[in-house]
Structures are given as structure tokens and as C-alpha cells.
Image (cartoon, rainbow, N blue to C red; front, side, top):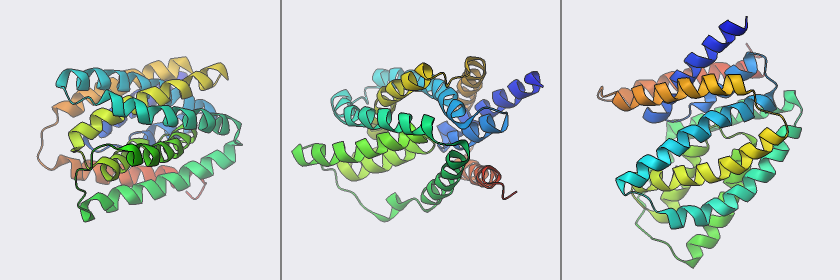
Length: 250
């Protein structure tokens, strides 16, 4: 049975890595699947973070080489996000399993609706740059996002991108460079808490990381025009099924 579970995790990681590159939201698949294979929700959450941390290290290195790397702004926002992630991680590891599953299911449905609606397309955001007001507002917003990332993480990347669009008006390429460093910083603090509390299954984390990395590589080679549309549709359908399964609706 363990071998079957490892195969399931490997292919889920592969699918999640592919989806993350093309549409985002791969954790909507990985966390529920880890729970369905028998891991407690807190351990599923921690195990998933190992693969995400590894992926973000690679992403940070790639963005640094490309030149789209505003590390000063990223670190300014990463500090409150890290503080929030520490608080959120402690909340996550102390939540009853059934309550966590319910929260995760509700979050999946809400964030998927936001992704489908994509409110960014309705608003033209001028480039504002960075000033004292932006930093103050951004620090508060990213503390909240850090708490969210510490508790759930799934969909955090999309929420971070949306927040940065409204705060700065920067291009999505530049924003993605900021996002990956923010996520890496707060993910590191969060992961330490999950590791110390014994909420990481290292075998599953390794297999998930291999699948995730392979999927991300294949996703980066994916060049079918408008492919992200059907990938997003598959993500929405699969995630909704998992959300309903988490709360025993199906």
C-alpha cells in the first residue's frame, strides 16, 4: 500500500508542478491528496511546504539571473509576511483535523472563485512605485497574507500577485520576481515550525518534490496556445471535487 501511495504522491506532485507553472494553485491538489493518503492535516501541510520551498529556491535563482529581481521591496514585505506565517503555522498545527479540513475546503472554493473571476482584468492599475504609504499598507496586507500562508498556503501565490498588482502597478514579470522571494522567506520560517513540531513526512516530501520539479520542467516546455485555459478548468474541477471530499459531501 505504501508503494501505491508514493506513486499517487509522485504523479500528484507532477501535476501540481505543471499546473503551478501554467496556471497556479497546485497546492489545491497536493494537500488534499496527502490527507487522503493518510497523513494528518498538519503533517500534510508541512510535507507540502518542503516541495514548495525547493521550488521557490529554484524560482528565486532563475529570476535573479533574468534581472527581474526587486529584492529590496521583496524583503520589506517578506518580514511582516514571515511574522504572519509564524503565527499562522502555530494556528495550523493546533487546529483539530476536522476543522482544518473544513477550512481548507472553504478556502479552496473561495480562492478558486477569485481565480476564475480574476478581478485584475476589471481594474486598470497605474504604476505607483514604492513610497512610505505603500510600505505601511503593504506591511499590514502581507502580515495577513503570511498568516494565511502559515495556515493554508494553497492559493497564496495568486493572492500575493493580486496584492502586489494593486500596491505597485508593476508588470507581472517583475511582480513574480518579488513574489517568489517573499514566499521563500516566509515559507522558510513556517517550515521550521512544522519541522520542529514533527509535522513533516520526509519520504513523502522527497517524492512530492521530485514530482513537483519534473512537472514544473515539463510545464515550462508546454507551448500549446491557450493551453492555460483548459489547465485552469481541470484545476477548478479537480479542486472542487477534493474540497467536497474533504467535508464528506461526496
